[in-house]
Image 1: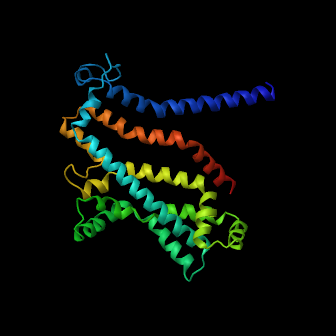
Image 2: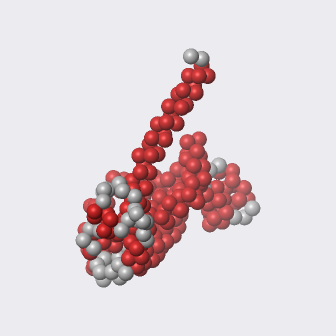
Image 3: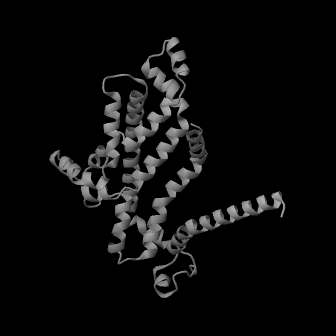
Length: 276
C-alpha cells in the first residue's frame, strides 16, 4: 500500500467516524420531531419508531391553549435582558482587569474567578431569600437580577482575549485623543467580535434553557418560562409525549437558527483562541 493510499484510507476512516457520531447525535432530534408530528392515538397504539400516518400539527396547535406562547415571550424577554446586562458588565469588567491598573487588581480577579468552583445549586437558597426579602418573588426582576451583572466565565474569557490585543492599537487611539471609553467602544470591542458572538451564543443558550431558578422563584403561569412550561405539560396532559415533543421542538428551534446564522463567527473564535 502506497503512502497516498494509506493517507486516503485514514481520511476515509476519520470521515466514517465523524459521520457515525453525527448520526448518533442527530437521531434523537429526528425522533423527537417525528413524535411531535404523531397523533396521541397513533403514538399510544403503534411502535415507538413508527412514522406518523398521516403527519399532524395538532400537537403544535394545542400548545397555544397551554400558555406556551406567553412562556416563549417571557423566556425571550428574560434572555434578552440578561444578555444585554451580561455583555455590558462583562466587557467593562474584563477591560478593567486586562488594561487598567489599580491596587489589588489581580487578587480581586482571582478571588472573583474562584466563584466558578461554587456549584449553582448552592446559591439557589440564598438568592431565593434575597429576592423574597426584597419582595421580588414571582416577578420578572427576580428572574433576571441574579444573572444580569456579568459572570466569572464571561469576564475570564474576555479578559484573556483583551490581553492578546496589541497595545499599539490602544496607544494610537489615545494619540488621536480617545479616552478610555472611546478605546473600549471603537478599538477593543470591534477587535473582539468573534469572541463576543461566541459569548452571546453561550449566554443565550444557558439562559434559554434555564430551569431550576425559574422553577424556584416563580409560580403560576404569569412568569413561567419555556423549560418550566414544557415540564408542566407532562403532568398537565397525562404524559402525552407527542405534545411534549412538540413543545421541545418549538423551544429548540430558535437556538438552532441562532447557531446556523452565527456558526462562522464561532469557528473564527475557536481558530483565534487556538492561535493565541
